[in-house]
Length: 74
Image 1 (cartoon, rainbow, N blue to C red):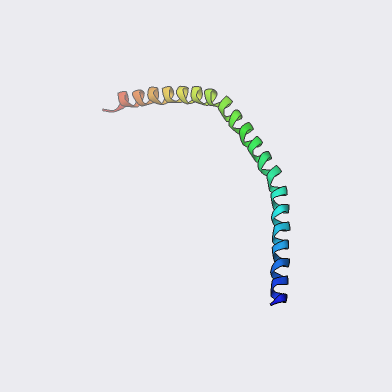
Image 2: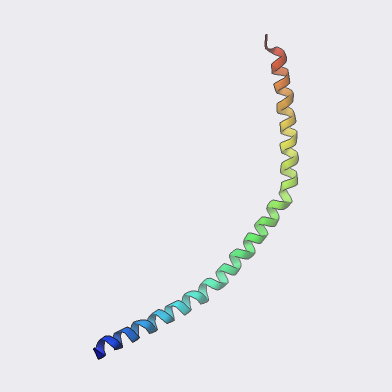
């Protein structure tokens, strides 16, 4: 029984040490990912007006071509 208690205590210590190490490594990574996600979101937001303008222009061209095709149909 003493050996079992000793082994459980040893495993508990290993688990706590592992957990502390993982948290210490994951926390800075999570912060970095959050920072990069914020930068990506800002970059996408800055591109949105340009993409919407191009989409509007393309939509107008498609509508014009569609009208031309409608005129050609018998």
